Every structure is written in C-alpha cells, then in structure tokens.
Length: 194
Image 1: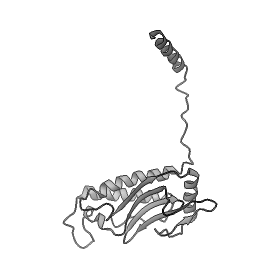
Image 2: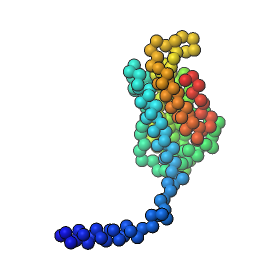
Image 3: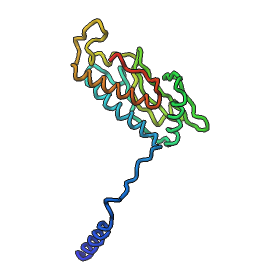
Image 4: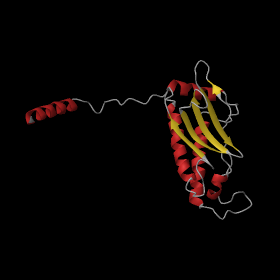
C-alpha cells in the first residue's frame, strides 16, 4: 500500500515539475459576462444595506427594502437587457414600467430614482412575479437616511444624528451605486441630498 502511495506521489511530482509556471496562461474572464454588472450591484447594495441598517430605528421591509436575488437567467438575456437600457438613454425608468425584450420571453424593470423616494434596482424575468433576478433597494421616502445626515433638511439640525463617519460612509456608498448605474444608464442622477 505504501509503495503505491509513494509511486503515485512521484508521478504527481514529475507531472507538476513539467508545467512551465512562468508561461502558463490563466484564462481571462469573458468580457461578455453581463451578469458581472448585476453581481457588482448586489455587492454595492449589501454594503449600503449594512450602513442604512446601522440605524436601529430603520425597519427593513417597511422603511426600506433590499433585494439580493440572482437566479437563473441566461447571460445572453442579461446582455440584451443591458443593451436595451443603453440604447434608450432618454427613457424615464419607473418602477411600474415592464420592458419586454423582443424575440425572447423575458423582460425587465430598471429603476433608478431620486426625489421623494430613492430607488436603485433591476428585475429580470418573464414577468413581475417571475423575476429570478431582483437586485437593489427601494424606499418611497428619504426617512431611512435622516439619522445618517446632520439634518433632515438644510434648516433644522437632527438630534438623532449618528455621526460624520456614518454620514460620509452612506454618501460614499450612494455615489458608488450611482456611478455603477451610470455605466449602463448615464442619466442616473447624483444623490445630492446626502
């Protein structure tokens, strides 16, 4: 038994020794991986979520919703969705607009809004109710951010203010999400109230 183990290890050593590690190519990730954009939005949303929820008064699911679902949608479909968004830069994307992708059974909602609310998400699927991809966040008013900001508006100070570090962190993350959305839709507005 020991002889077999030693014999196998010598064979492995010979094989490993014959690999030219200096010239070995590592395959590059496919540039056509459109799901990468969705995964990056998910990662940014996770950081944003942890910062927003550092305020114990925020009720997830009531004050703000976070979406973190990346299910089985072909990369080809995600590429078509992203291309459709890029090809329609003047479109106003609202949470109620389901856009169908011609020649497929799929559609999407792309939501980026800053005003009385703050949304940044994408849904891709065969319908509202059948969307294997739903990533981002949604709140219909800016209250979830108040305690992260020095004042709930420019006139009054906020006695519940959580501090400059959290404010700066929240602002930084919001700007990163905005920049990420602008990669496919340049009209994404800056979150300037933070």
